[in-house]
Length: 386
Ligand code: SF4
Ligand code: SF4
Image (cartoon, rainbow, N blue to C red; front, side):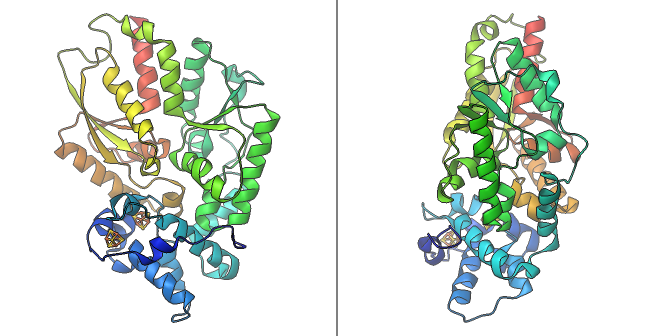
């Protein structure tokens, strides 16, 4: 380990057959900029030149290094199986954060300042969830980590989840207020703060005796699950994405769901529906999460859910928020998704990413959008009422 705690992944810097296709067609940074300099293979090349001192660091170069949304799509699409481009992006940014902070794009610094001031990326103080209403159980082994988006943009998600669990006598508790998982700091290159925040989270997990940390944000889940090890932090709990947690909870209520009358639900058995399911690319090694989502959706009785068509989420993670907070860029990504769902003749879009759902709702495009948690709980409510 060097002083930045992240070692560069040499293979990902050097190995490239310049196929000029796969990473390029997937990369949102290239899509927005239309500039080859923004591609992962070229980012790696610039970094190699910098290290050899063949070129000097400039504001434009820093802009390129900060353009990556950390979406993982280049890694998924590269002809090599074992690419870890994002490791190197974080490594480069950590060096820039340490030595050339004045060159970092303003929007990235703004988010870090927001976090430093308020503990959340929006610098919001007035819409934190009132946990008292949720019948949480202190000392429960399951603790929720809602994250910034749920807390400040979509608190209803947590309300639904909490109500569902309380009704089914599944105990849960909440993690302390204004705790950041550390992911936005990591993607901004501020590794020291990322580690500090993760250590605070670890202390809180210990204080509330939690065994399971239930995450709602794919980027936060990826960070705690994969990045913490690299940063030398053992969070001290099992990290579970909420769909898996919900899947287990649903199994406990399976009799109730299987006992539904034929015509229950908002759709009749006669109507079949194609679902355009948005996978979070951060789950590249966690296909079981996508599988459990598919099993749940297609397993719901009497909904008519028939085809399950998979597509990658657009780039709404911490890295994406850092770089594409501009509304017109988000709108472009959303329109692309809606267009593809239309071509695939899908009846609705389902996502497991609260932030992706938030932006899809902000830019409606004539196709219904459902977030998995709310959709499922909505089905169960409908079913229970019958
Ligand atoms: S992680 Fe995403 S944005 Fe970054 S280089 Fe790869 S494809 Fe492009
Ligand atoms: S997909 Fe992989 S091998 Fe092909 S150009 Fe991109 S980085 Fe190089």
